[in-house]
Image (cartoon, rainbow, N blue to C red; front, side, top):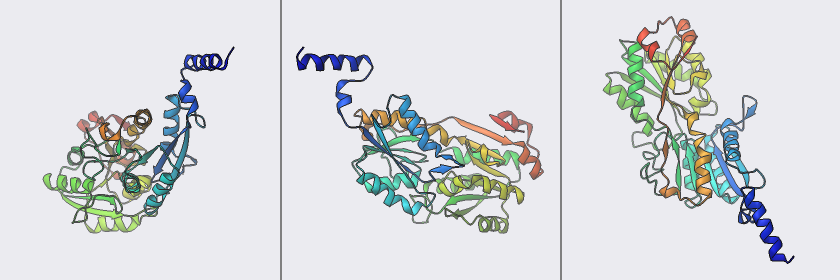
Length: 334
């Protein structure tokens, strides 16, 4: 048996196992992940990073053979993101998965050639990540829970609960990208505009991680006579959501969190869930590794909204939830 016959036989065997001979000869793909938060969350590996690894494994990528991961975690110190992004570029990664606007912005500044697959970017077009959601046009695509109607819908729910709602606090993060001349990022502008349209006076407050001064923020809400608090889905509030909910309840302030944040203990959460972005990233990364171009790969949009109501928190606040609002809930926490 000559050498060509042996090689041909080996290739047939590999194809029969679902792996091409050419795939076996190439080096493993290097997949970078740039994450605002910590590598360990509540004593467990970061769920977003673990979800990436699990998702690609489900698609047939064997760690160490087909793919090598390079995780970088800012530990909620967003000023570290630019250097961490450069580290990934210098590692020669084939693609970078990003989680949040700040990490996506840092990766974008670090490279214009390496594909970036982004998630938890509320409005990719508004912050300049994509030309359009359908045709991003650069080296970035991904999944987004972009929902232009969310601020007005959240306010409608709060007004159903508090008919005489006149003043609402909005808690954001000082370090999110896309601020205009007035200092407002797109998500902040949208919430301020929605409040004015609803006849409600907004009080925008910004905190900075990794150790935001929440006491000062709540003191300002009290001074501003806020009747409710909308917590934006941005890094510092996201990381501190449970503490924010506890402080708000202690000050008898009803809270509205983003969709899927019912683990916070806040009174209400409504909207598209950020966690629903995560399972889509491995699928998109798989396409990129197989040759798809980010410029021509549409952003996937997570669009299902969910309403959760925490009755335990309502009792602590001394509030009665209207029956019609309870009927709308996807989840009621007793």
